[in-house]
Length: 158
Length: 158
Image (cartoon, rainbow over all chains, first blue to last red; front, side, top):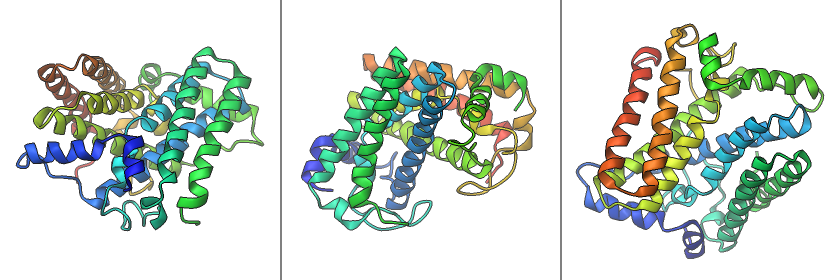
């Protein structure tokens, strides 16, 4: 993971390393395969919940469901997902072979793109509470463009 | 899914059904395999974040990381996970064969157990903000007991 990404996503790695040193007997650092599995799970959960918001803005709107879904997305966007891209996870298999391209671990733009994702996810959670459908729909589009921006350059094509 | 579970976890299923009917062209209801994959992902994310809280209370404590992790757990506990146990998902394969036992889909206690999980997850998010390590550790234990209570009866053994 590059410096820029670490700065933007927080010093979760450093914290984990310290925590690991302090309780080496009680805790083992998660294996790369586990980290990859967790990040693949995180993006599945983000997809589940963006899909729920999309179904609401395109169909019958349920504000309560949109708020719940937006809160899940925002909590993950704020969770320090960067720690799941720790050194040693550049390749390997979680649920499946990682789709992260090698460039993701080297390119300073990743931190900026991750920051954009967090910003738009937090804004979605914010506008979801007000419950204006057009605003939520517009914000969902902004969020999804931040997903695409990163996938375009840093996710392997199927 | 039984009535009790539906009541406790909210009427997400009904909402989804309505949304589906309203935009049948735009949206397809997710397939059972997708729902199973999402619920398996959700529990992985819960495990990732309970592990983070555990590492903090047993090692060097970082309040910011604990708050982030607790917010992820709470957002998922509040998200309507019951919708991922919809009819048709009693068996099948997501990332792997479901570990949900058939009884989960029939037993009225499941709703109560899910409610206990949500309550303790929300309490963990609440006490995380205050940042008292002993309180957080105690609350993590309470949360983990609600996980175990459900796993004991409704999750297949490895």
